[in-house]
Length: 153
Image (cartoon, rainbow, N blue to C red; front, side, top):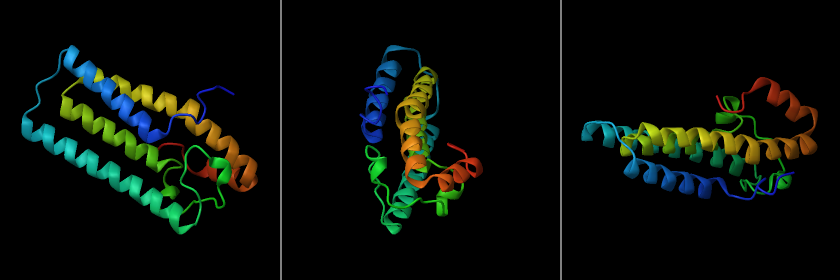
């Protein structure tokens, strides 16, 4: 197991990636997007991302299970309803939408490449360890859920 597994909280990773995007945007060419579209795109993606995160968190709360991404072994219930019928990781999708919105605001195609870094990091160092823990806790129930619902979308 890598030392990076479950070490950086996803929200902190989003802030780090967002900062790196800003650095890319100020140091490399940007594209011309009219301000109205930049602000509207940013606001919409930010709002949709936040809504998806909230829906996921509320579903965990209603199931009385942990929402702590650093301690999946503390899960007391397998949440498969609501937004979790469509994605096993809707909160991470919400963060990704926020990062894409930030790219729109920054008008930086190059910064968009860091969204791929986010997805790759999350798959390897966050989601895979979570899946291992959930499979240990919930066994066949989680394996069946994984077979029915995609990791992202």
